[in-house]
Image 1 (cartoon, one colour):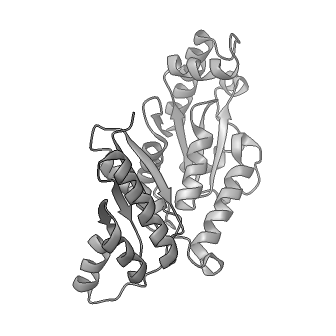
Image 2 (cartoon, one colour; image 1 turned 180 degrees about the vertical axis):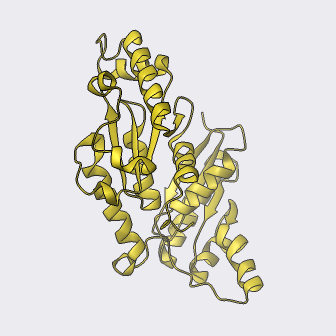
Image 3 (cartoon, rainbow, N blue to C red; image 1 turned 90 degrees about the horizontal axis):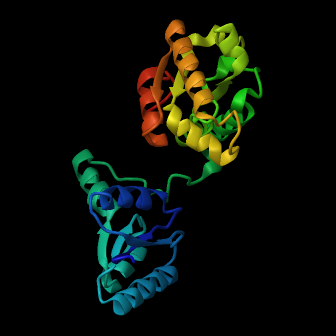
Length: 273
C-alpha cells in the first residue's frame, strides 16, 4: 500500500518535474502513489488539477505532495491559492533566484520540447535515435565513421538499451556490436569496428547474471548455459584487454550509470553539457 500521493503537474510533458521529484523522493523510505498531470496549460486545467489534488487530500486525510514546473504565473497562482497539498514549485525555487542573480529574465519556455520545429538539438537527437536503431546489434556497417561511440560486448550485456539511452538523452550516435563465437575463435574484434578503436567502449557482465537474463529468453539452451556464459564473458574480456579497450561491468549498474561512465571516458567533442 502507498503511504502518500505525489502529483507531478506541468504545462509541458512533466518529464522535468517527475525526474527531479523522483530524485528527491528516493531519499525517503516510503512508497508514494504517483499521479502525472501533464499539459496543464490553461487556468481551467489548473482548477481541474486543484480539484483532483484536494479530493485526494480529503480521501486520504494527508496532504498530497505536489511537484510543479508551471511557468505561467496566472496558472501557477491557481495552484498556490487553492491547492491543499504541499506545493513544491521547482521553477520558483530555482529560476527566479537565478533571474535575480544573473540580472536576466528567463524565457519562461514551457518544457524541453517547445517549438521543436526550430530546435537543432531536437532534430539532432532524432537523427541519433535513427542512427542507433539502424546500427543496433551489428545490423549495419555503414557510416560508422559518424558514430560517437561503438559499444561491444556479449549478447544481452546491455548494449541496446544503453545505445538508445545515449541517443535519446544526449543525441549521441551510438552503434553496438555483439561479440559472437566467430570473434572468439579469431580472438579479434569484429572487422568492421577495428578502424574505430578509439570510439569503442566495452560492456561485460557477471556470467551468473548473464545466464539468468538469457534463460528468460531461451530457457535450457546452450546459449543460456552458465558454462557457455562463463566462456563468452572470459573471452570477451580477454579480447578487450588485448585491444586496449575501455570497459565496465553492467551487472549492478543502471543504464544511467553506464551511460555516465561512457560519457566520462569517451568525451565526445560535440556534446554540450
